[in-house]
Length: 243
Length: 233
Image (cartoon, rainbow over all chains, first blue to last red; front, side, top):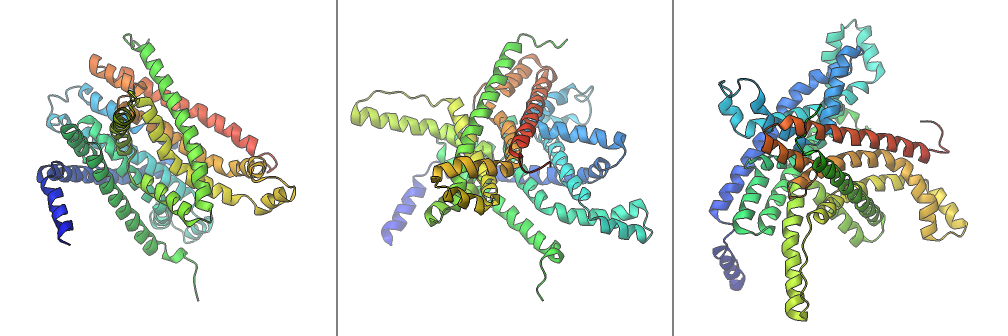
């Protein structure tokens, strides 16, 4: 196959777009995207668990504020939330003088805050659904054992709700990965930002955008398989038993 | 009172663009979704394969990337076509790849994949006996679809449809990035020009919530309409 390898060499040597330099941009973009998505998901998850417990409280003054929060953040586009935080962060009194300013001057942190608040709102609703659908028998059994409200929450309701929330949460993770493409709008060099940069340098839309689309596709499938594996492990007791 | 500093009319115009874009892409998405669902249920492996590839690929790539690919790539594609027309057929035609059309096409194309999944589930929920009864009455395939499958399918599809619509509505904000003047773009421009982001962006957020509440009400009424004959829910 000499002509094929010659053709391939020719393709790479004459290639102006897939060069080590542009590969460097994509790599930086991949790192930024991963950091943003991972951090916002972790912080969002930590926020969402107490919020979901508050949201499923019977006391109105506890559940209502959380409901308003999730309603607003799920009802408005992430782009608008990002703009409000990105342009609005300077309006907090004294932030430009404080030690936080070097952090908030970068686009990364406003984006991280916007993504975290957004994913926390969605995750709260996912968990609330899972908490609400806890089988009555489990709660009754816990009561019969004389468990207190908090012990029951910790040992019975939360672990079983986590498992039931898993498939929906997997979707939320993929949604977050795709939503993170918006970060490129506020000058962040994430994967999409890298593609936009390469596009504007070379005026070739197909190579950069198809390339990052492929990377996003691989990431999506990786997340999908990871959650399928988790479901298999954690939900094994719910599978139909074969004797 | 809210001082919009002369941006008020443009914001309202932008809201109009948002609504038009959302409704048109919803129609396209429903049409594509019905086609995809039919293809997925067909016995032909080719149609099934194409539909599966379409829904998998679209759902694996961010909306914004697809939008940019279509918008920036679309202009180049259109230019190539008009070049061919000019050099080979001597037809001098300049087609401007319009941002609005690109927005409708991309959003409709993306949500067609989601709608396809929704409709497939809904079609499968319709009792087969109903379709057989329609055939026994001598109805043609099209008539069976219009009078029996579609109305009964909608009952099952509406919850998913309304979900998709809410996501679609929020996705329209992305067109502001590819240069369409919807309300988000107007508000972002105004924020940059006046350094008062909250004055412009918060009304836009409220407008989205308003559209969402109105459509929630419409979907509740539609659900009632399609639930006729199935008792209270």
